[in-house]
Picture 1 (cartoon, rainbow, N blue to C red):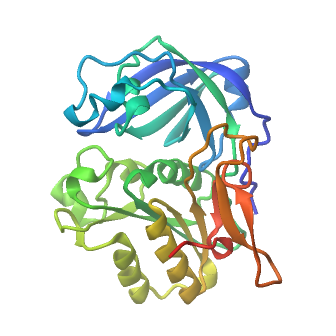
Picture 2: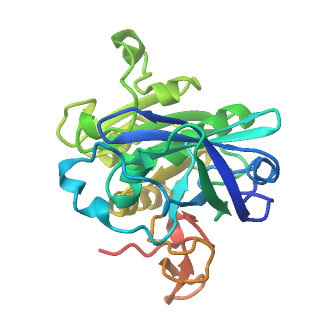
Picture 3: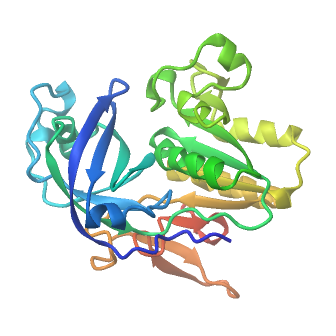
Amino acid sequence: MTTNRSSTKKGLFSATVCTNKQIGERFYILGLEFNGSGAKAFADFQPGQFLQLDLTKAPLPQKIPDELIDAAQRNILLRRPFSSCNVTIEGKKNIIEILYCVVGPASVRMTALARGNTVSVIGPLGNGFGVPDGKKLALLVSGGMGAGPLEHLAKVLTNDFTKIEVIAFAGAKSAKELPFEKRLDEVSQSLGFSIREFAEYGIKSRVATDDGSAGFKGPVTECLLQWLSKSRRSPEEIIIYSCGPEAMLAKIAEIAKDKKIDCQVSMERRMACGFGVCQSCAVECKVPGSNETGYKLCCEDGPVFNSSEIVFSR
């Protein structure tokens, strides 16, 4: 099994903004360039790991969504955690791309970051996705903003695990809330390549929206179940990787248990520090060999866990 944690110790680094591209009404991709010790630290940045950004000095943009005008005035006291949607090594520099959505005072400030600005970063942090031996099919299932780390994972799987077939499933409430650039042409979609971000790696994808405005009408979990019902693959050959809202992850874990399929999920918690000091990101987990439960830290033990060990709230 491959390691799911970077071999590099976490540290404090300075990154330079190289891109900040808007891809939707509220969706952006921020590109951060690392050089020197920062480039070395993040050279082995694993899909599912995260970094903490200091946005306390980021300015407010000129244009702020009406519903965020009041919230945007609040001071930013804590760093914000983000996973990567892409990592590119170019010579001695390393570029990490972050998919983000404008939802509050920190993310609205991120839209004002311009090429050449510097950002203080702590990382690499946490445990990422791992690839168990013997797997022949990886199913990537995202809900909303959970697509980011799975895009990074898609790149790693296609580059480093060429014998594993990969299929992506992406869900959202509506087409407008899918965090991707515009969909591919009708011919590409007819061949199964619905999402550009996965198609560039030769990965087929399926889209599900609750209102039916794009792709399958209904939750992405139902789309996955429909696909699994037609699959002739042995459960032992399959692994599910998932990231998204916790209710969706709970259903994914239920499906994986019922189908006897290995499954890894990326959990989300509020993280004040990102490295286990504040103890604010507890995740309830089963204790092996007993009926009791205990708590692990999302930042240190996760954010990626085996779905079978998580106690999901009902």
